[in-house]
Amino acid sequence: MKASIFRHGMNLWPPYLFAGIHVTAISDDYRHIRVELRQRFWNVNYVRTHFGGNLFSMTDPFWMLALLKNMGPKYFVWDKAGSIDFVKPGKGVVFTEFKLDQAMIDQLKAQAAGGDKVLHWFENEILDARGDVVARVRKQVYIRLKPDQR
Image (tube, rainbow, N blue to C red; front, side):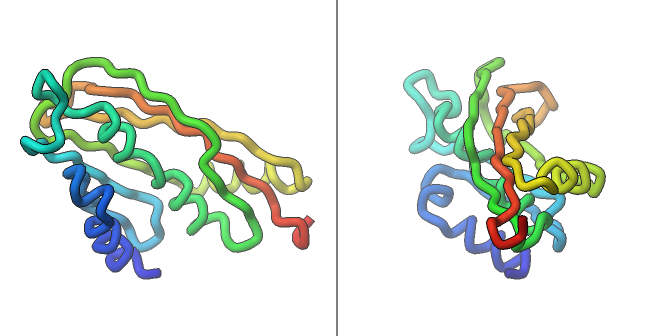
């Protein structure tokens, strides 16, 4: 699917639409993705800062999706685990970026070449408008050659 169409679809997807999560950019090769969380009266917590679940949600599918598009159809790619460390209260617009380079893709393909599963951790920082870190998110992705490719 074309990245621009996918981006618009993600922005209309109800869990993102109603949470205030907005995908602002996806490169044509899916190697760069930028996601924002916009603060609204309906998506804040009791103390009027960003709800932590929304901060985590804004990072949820993107490492897996970037890898799916770049590893190719020979591989299973799944989200395996995740964690978030809240650093400071998030207010206003916060954002994160996902950047996948060819060296990482080559490394993961080499690790998966023998047919074994590969578990790789990716990290993101969620930043506010001033560039301060609001949260650090870790996502573990599972990668494995499909049985007919081993």
